[in-house]
Length: 296
Image (cartoon, rainbow, N blue to C red; front, side, top):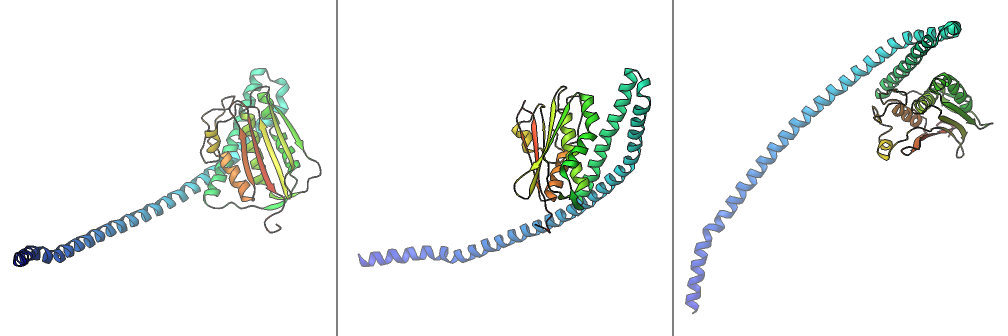
């Protein structure tokens, strides 16, 4: 029996011997193939990375050219638009009593359209600066309530033309805040003109200025328009975002105003948010710090 087992072991060993010898060779070939595949993939990755870097550089150059073009066009459009709006207001003041209803309506259309175009130009200029990383804030003491009163007066004619009332509630005795006056007014104008745009005839827009938490002031603009869904609110402050609905008088938008508002407010270290529901109007709230970053 022992001899039989020994013979069986010898036979089995003889059969396995070639397989054992082949294993190192096969493993070596597999390793070599693996390294070759890894080298090929690394080369492809390097090529893709170089192509991506080139595409990014071309995209950055194209974006810079676009910003320069937008800036030049906006600057060139601003002056003639101001002239058109100025002469329209002058005509309205001087000859309003001698115009019939149709003529007055045409003159009002000229004035409103030039105002709308001027807002678009200002937004285009702001976008070009923001995308180029050039948001510069010139902070100075600003009376937020006074700024709101001035902005309400500026938009009064637009509101009257749509039959919309504007109510301003400004808390008395607020301290001046260290803000960029021009850019803060741009935020107010965007919010107020939007509120008028989406208000129905006979509606009311409420503007409020009050103290917020300690060291903060709060601006609010509320309308009684169609409101917004949760999905619309989620993308509202992104550039070129439009709700898909025109204003109540058919006014359009390019979807830049609220993006610019958010950027300006956050540049001040502030916050902007919206509270709205379908059919319930919209309330935009802006919170701004009273002191600048160096004073905080």
